[in-house]
Amino acid sequence: MKDYATLRDIQLDLSRNAITCEDIVKHHLSIIKSQAHLNAFLSVFETEALHQATLIDKKVKAGTAGKLAGLVVGIKDVLSYQHHPVQAGSKILDGFIAQYNATTIQRLLDEDAIIIGRQNCDEFGMGSSNENSAFGPVLNSIDTQRVPGGSSGGSAVAVQTGMCRIALGSDTGGSVRQPAGFCGVIGLKPTYSRISRYGLIAYASSFDCIGIFGTQVEDVARVLEVIAGPDEYDSTVSQKPVPKYSDEIHQPSKKRYRIAYFNETSNSSGIQEEVKSTLFNTLDKLKESDNTLHAIDFPLLEYTLPTYYILATAEASSNLSRFDGVRYGYRSAATTNLESLYKKTRTEAFGKEVQKRILLGTFVLSASYYDAYYTKAQKVRQLIRNKIKEILSNHDFIIMPVSPTTAFKLGDHTTDPLEMYLADLFSVLANVAGVPAISVPCSVDSLGLPIGMQVLANDFEEKELLQFSDYLMKLN
Ligand code: GLN
Image (cartoon, rainbow, N blue to C red; front, side):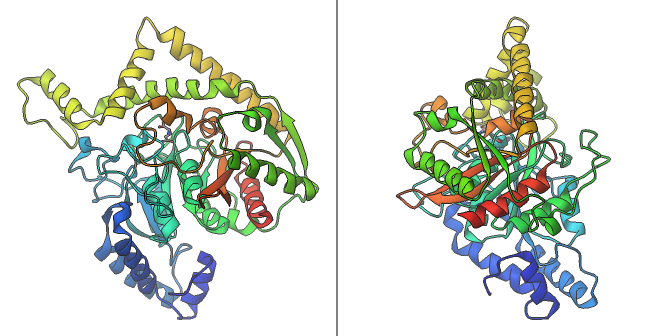
């Protein structure tokens, strides 16, 4: 198959009969097969995807195909696709079949996207390397000794290698942007409440966002405009109208931007030199193109990671209480009474990281520590949001690295959890503040490993964020 830059190019050829959806699906299936050792997919819906393709090919001929005809999508194993398995990368959901479609999945299908399979991830989205999956780690195709990032590692690698054109992941503290950065693709986390969470397996509900992986800003924009917007099944979704992002990304409303960056991100000693120099090169190029740059002190940055880990684990301990061996998936065989059924099921089927987080979250919510940790973290979260909103009222964007280093080796951070949590240092900020953020591939280090730049924008400014990302990618 020809190397198509964008979905628009594919659709042009579909309308000219130069290619069929069946050809496209076969193309992706062959890559999935040849790259099976990367462990990116947990299920491949081969027969179904091919069948779907023939139906959409008929619609293309009849001129009735939807906006996403020709698009092949993979979904992280946290999104419900009716009659298909969904397990959040966990043994506790062994054998569980989704009862209904997540709103995002329904909207993709309604516009004739083809869902090719479900993708490996860290258990319940808890991780930064995809090493916490009950199905084994995902490997980064650039260097298979290295992690793809997490928790949506399977989705990032699938897009990186062309197993699918677009993947949907979830981003609670960076799980779309960080693996996108490690794999050299685009990863968008929209504003909290822009996209319905109906049918997304919850990790930390006040942070969880469905995000989009792609290689082209235009494709990401097109998918966003299809899946975003009000939903009667999720009352937390914003009622704000959804712009036609894909029509507008190539015509920036502004030619010059006011951009902030933090002294704390550029001075920090824990950042890999090449990540730092990529940040400065990007800033220099932006300055040369007449944009205004401001270095800002953001001392709250050091509180962002602890705030995230206190609140996210608290919410997780509550959300994961539903997996009790009675209602879903796995049930221990060695139980004697109800209490042992709960205990044994949860002990046998939750992985170590998930257990640790449930314990930590339950601790910060316990009566004696609630005010000292949970209430305090809520207050700090508000301070962080206020400060970010203030900065974004004077600037169009904030620029920072996606993560302090490029992709690390498998096993490098598995012994010390703090080292692993530090990989999220820059990505949790957008979730704590609730604002949209994107990871854009910018450069590579001396080993050829991708370096992503992160851009944060004000609430609901996805259009501006996508326009700027397009500009940034052309600048590099
Ligand atoms: N790495 C972070 C965590 O483990 C973020 C995960 C995510 O965004 N799902 O919590």
